[in-house]
Amino acid sequence: MNVLVVGGAGYIGSHCVRQALAAGHAVAVLDDLSYGHAESVPPGVELFRADMGDEPSVRAALRTGRTDVVIDFAAFTNVGESVRQPERYHENNVVRTEGLLRAMLAEDVRKLVFSSTCATYGIPDRMPMTEDLPQRPINPYGATKLAVEHRLRALAATEGLSFAAFRYFNAAGASADAAIGEDHAPETHLIPLAIAAALGRRPPLQVFGADYPTPDGTCLRDYVHVDDLSRAHLDVLPKLEAPGQALFYNLGTGTPYSVKDVIASVGRILGRPVPHEFAPRREGDPPALYADASKARRELGWSPRYATLDDIVRTACAWHLARPAGFAS
Ligand SMILES: NC(=O)c1ccc[n+]([C@@H]2O[C@H](COP(=O)([O-])OP(=O)(O)OC[C@H]3O[C@@H](n4cnc5c(N)ncnc54)[C@H](O)[C@@H]3O)[C@@H](O)[C@H]2O)c1
Image (cartoon, rainbow, N blue to C red; front, side, top):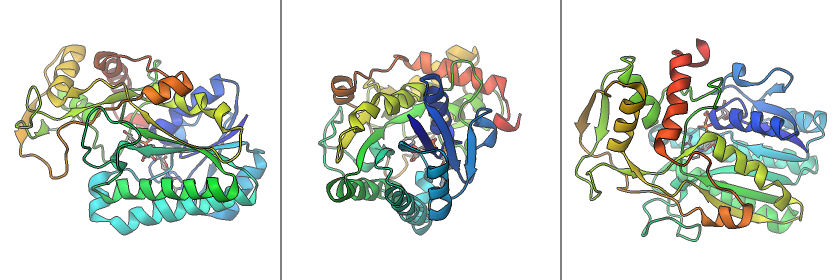
């Protein structure tokens, strides 16, 4: 298929681009490089540097690539920042996504894979989390993703848009050859912060809360390898052939690991301890979030190939050792 990967110069998008190429698809990338890295776009893949809300530019990219399907990763993703700047998040994640959708319909491109998030659920009533849990986001970031999910559902009903929205848990790891990996500025994700602390590139890791009702007192999360996430975007494409499909899937391994587990794993793999200190809980951090991804297993035949935290952390460590300053190295 001819695939336009929007946000394809970002962390997860760049992994998906490589996998789509390996699967034989023709791939182009549209990214405004607000957070992405042009260096992550493979040679031979056309990069349209544009805002997804800029309809003429998006339409030109769709036409040039004779696009069959859009895979959309583009968003601002920092939860804390979304609390401080809710309008900016609404503008980018909702209003500009609306521009992308208008451009797609104008060019008669009616297949979309969309990056949603487990943050749309807020603080869930039960674990593991299934897709039918109530969605009550507790921060503006999660609210923007839920707003897009609602909009997509409406367009499936009225315009014949066929879409899959994947609700990711915690994306982690790097490509197996350490050529691309996570390079966010500022970095807020636990695994890269723990690695940087262990390598002396950052101050000691702050652990927010050691008094949660979990086995070791720290928060439990579901870490899923970025290549496993990416593969699901290709696995779902056959399902989008029929018009009007509205599909929602959780993507996680279903195995919860605590902050202390992550610290131990990074220490084991790097062979040096992760300096860390304990701080009070952060507001809005639920004790545990982990997926029931059996719907994706059942309907897409998807299952994570990186099954353990150590498997995932090993790839992240290899990337951070190979590229101490990320793509700027
Ligand atoms: N990383 C995670 O753990 C995680 C978890 C759940 C959901 N998600 C979602 O997955 C997607 C990808 O996340 P990521 O970690 O790769 O983020 P990222 O910041 O690395 O990638 C996002 C990309 O989108 C681009 N972008 C942002 N706004 C744009 C716009 N208006 N027009 C064009 N390009 C734009 C950025 O330049 C960047 O390259 C996001 O939608 C995020 O909300 C990520």
